[in-house]
Amino acid sequence: MLMSAIDTTVVILALPTIVSDLSSSLLLAVWTIIGYLLVVAVFTTQIGSLGDAFGRGKIFAMGFTVFTIGSLLCGLSGTMLELVSFRIVQGFGAAMLQSCSSALIADAFPAAARGKAFGYTTLGWNVGGTLGIVLGGVITTFLGWRFIFFINIPVGILGVYLARVTLRHEPGQIPRLDYPGMAILGSILLLLVYAATQLASAGISNLVLLLIMVALLLLPPFVYVEKRSANPIIRIGPLLSRTLGVPLFTSFLQAAGYLSVVFILILYLQGIRGYTPLYSSLLLVPGYVAASFLAPYMGRLSDRMGPRIVATAGIALIMLSVTLYLFLTVNTQDYYIITASLLGGIGGSMFWPANNSSIMAGAPTGTYGSVSGLSRTLSNVGTLVSYVLAISVAASAIGREAAFRVFLGSGNVIGGLEVPFLSGIKSAFLVSVSLLLFAGVLSSLRPSSSAG
Image 1 (cartoon, rainbow, N blue to C red):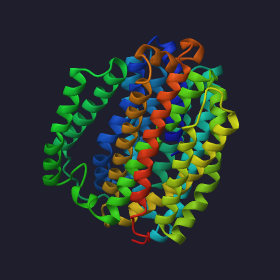
Image 2 (image 1 turned 60 degrees about the vertical axis):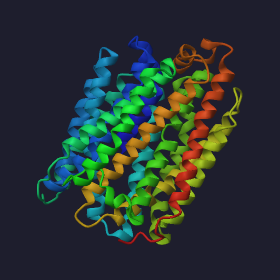
Image 3 (image 1 turned 30 degrees about the vertical axis):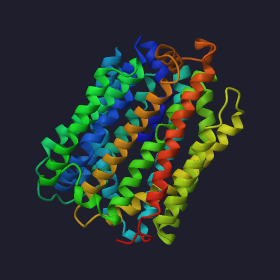
Image 4 (image 1 turned 30 degrees about the horizontal axis):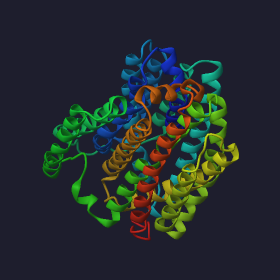
């Protein structure tokens, strides 16, 4: 969790520097984030099923290996196309790690103690996020962006060693992979993402409308295939149950509404305020620090009170945090941003352990791997949606060329357009608040107990 979080926040902070150094367009550079998420979203559930069959510990260790190799290759990239390709390699490793992580915890802890356990994994995520922000600012400023990938290598080597010597799992029956489902889901996501990037870069066009239409037409065949697959990417039946479906869809909506917020803030801090990557990172650290300290306690609290109250209260705080960002100006005081970040961090420390515990409590025995993979798939699809919406909405406020320039530099680069671009950023935050409101309502409908 620590390594995954470091990699996520580091890449966001370093993106403007990477674009400049590799002489690339932002449109291609955004695929370093979107391509990674796309691979993880498509393959996580299927790899989770392979973990059930071959041993989750083995797949988990392989994930560390692939992710570490991918990090090395990313750091050695000479062009943006190479970097995007090697981020996809990283994505395969991340899919292996993410698909098995929750299942390994569910194997090791009884239902009544899982909230505490997930609290510690959330601690790892937030410590990693903090390190990623701080190290990202320092490394990008003083060493260069390549080292943001190289720092994964020692952590990855340690992770491979620990996973191989500590994790055990008896393999089960080898499943049939859902190749048609993977192909259709991958096609749907790729079409939608490409349509959104074209919308952000060139505006509405016949090509954008055609891509969206084809993606929508593929949805019925995808549902048809999934209902008849022996090992579907998305199990339609469990999604309809209140016990499992509610926390899964809540996770999706929370990711769609919140996980691009840091990216939007970086656009604001570096693109409009003209702050350096290092200073921008320091403003976001307090929220991650608060979440790191509180996550284990919030996990224990969800074990005692049940996930419904804790997870729903967490979403409410996250929504309040993003609501505060709606009132940003070109001269907002730094303490205001820090306060909003703190509220978001506290909310995250409440939501993630409680919701993960709720998901695994609703998973039938023997399906922890596939349910863990499904949870990660929906969360990653939500994250993908979050980034695409954020980029499209923010870029629509001003001319596309000016929008991409502000993505890459300070407000001085686009002089005079800071205010309209800030309006676009606020529109992206408003979309986030709306999605979080739906997530909060849905979260309140989950069962009150995490026992399972």
